[in-house]
Length: 252
Image 1 (cartoon, helix red, strand yellow):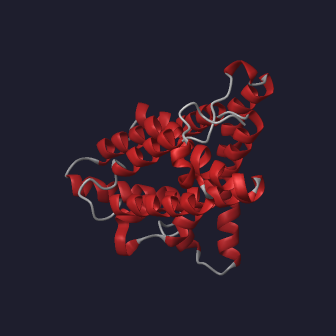
Image 2 (cartoon, helix red, strand yellow):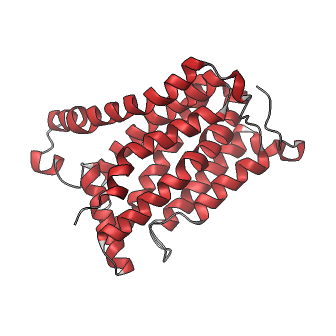
């Protein structure tokens, strides 16, 4: 795999697995801070900037040759996001509730923000609206709109382009994908941090699981294509599917 054109030996120490893990954990801390204490919560300003700029400076990943990406890969770019959305729905609607019920969790709790991710997110948006003294629809529009515009590029640059590539260089494909995807999932759980003492651990766990599976799939796509471009496009499409209905038709 050829390094990115901006790759430089001066940053080699930042591409070791230890450095990549430490940076990822620190960045997760920044994301948590921005979702709890800082006045612009729940928006990712510092985290989004850091996680986008650092990989571009450090390098180590590749966009490859556009013409060398196979036709089957482009088919995967289109189909994979729909498959992941379906898998997420199966987990959220059927499998996770079934597991919780089998563990003795009451039905009322299963269908509350404590375990239901969609309800927990709605509560987070309502809390944000109160903090910003504006309507939930407006917060929802800017929150999901910002995530859509940034995440496809920024998260792929950091989690697949930097973190996965750094871990893979020493740990191999499987362990690198598992570790980077786990950290990808944990970072998503920080987005519920605005709920503070009412933090819904069960819903957060559900988000970690879903994001972990997404991370594995995008690592696979990056590995298969030897280019970050397909995973970036697939990530954008993955986010577009649910975000389109939010941005184009906010609830009244």
